[in-house]
Image 1 (cartoon, rainbow, N blue to C red):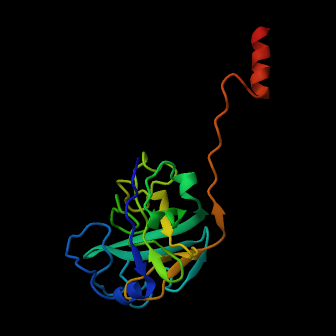
Image 2 (cartoon, rainbow, N blue to C red):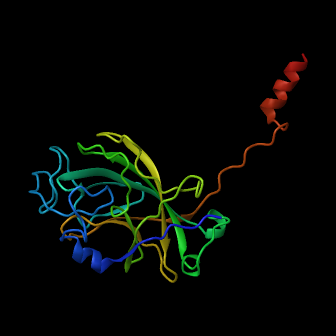
Length: 239
């Protein structure tokens, strides 16, 4: 049986306090999952004290609260001296259970006590850098009001309903993708919003809305039992 990947939980206060500092233990050339570490002079189109972005790009103001389906443009440092810009629309937040979506998993007691959620997002690369293979860990968090939870990643064999995939490769300027991210919320807590914390400890950009239950895919039709059009075709065959 499959065993879950261990998740990361970060207190909101600790994340905000650390956002203006270099990422803990990070060095130049780290991978795509590193948090921003060094500021650059803001461009004329970016909010004050934010990262520089390509000319003509307007970032969503820190502190903006967006609804499901609404687009926000965010910037973060993927690596030192490399700024990523993404247009993000959180389309759906789905609550599920381990029994329904993780059948046969070997879960420890701490994980089994949590509530799994699937978050479906649409993304567009609004920057100049190819973001192929970028994971949204340390970019989009799930907030329960006190703690930020990082997404979890699996293979299609482990969790076909919602892999938690990275951006496809390549993912050049103008490319679009729809991804599903997996979050676990602690017992006794409620999923409040999807959170992006801008560089420099500024107020978060958030997405929230109605949380729905995971809908099971439609079952395929049984062979040998055609619909009305099928019956008509069968009759035509006899003529």
